[in-house]
Length: 102
Length: 156
Image 1 (cartoon, helix red, strand yellow):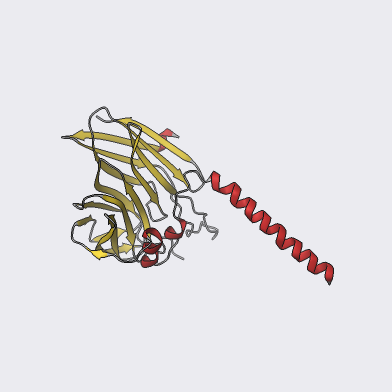
Image 2 (cartoon, one colour):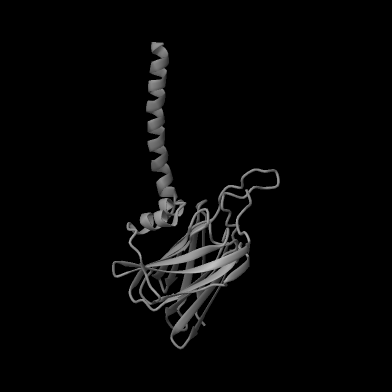
């Protein structure tokens, strides 16, 4: 499922910017399909960002995050750091992706 | 009559067992199991703050910068950037007051992270956005109003 997430991490004067784009329907559970049935909620609930194996950010998302979420964060780091993004949705699917800081 | 009562008694007893069993089974399955369901399912901003932080006492501050458009044409994807000069942040959360479920995201920041986070959110109707930050045991917040032309949530 690695192709679900696009991730990019770039270092500039000691600050690493990590940007990620995730393919996910992010259903709120309030939308109705064309037959009028409620589409069950399906959204990313938790995320973790690890740098060289150390957790730097832990987050929880609700249904208010847009479909195909985009996120970015910054940390004090260097080129060559290994950045790993782990995600978990409310249907218990795990996704993760790893990249090296450029 | 007696039989019927017994039947209901045993039924309620067994359903209790089932419930307990169900809880025991689903908990380990839910992965990291940190998701704060109570806060995310709160329909009021104040209540969500209370269930997330355990306190409603928030102080206004001008040290949190919320970057977002004043007018969003399409509420289904509104970019928001939050940055702050406040030191030693433990937790940062984004709330959209007029959304059906106001709490949108909450982050725990560890060492080395710079409090500068962007994300795209859904906004149901024109609403103030609140960012609540927990730092050194205090809750601080800033707000920004966004006008939405097209709702980002399903029409009922």
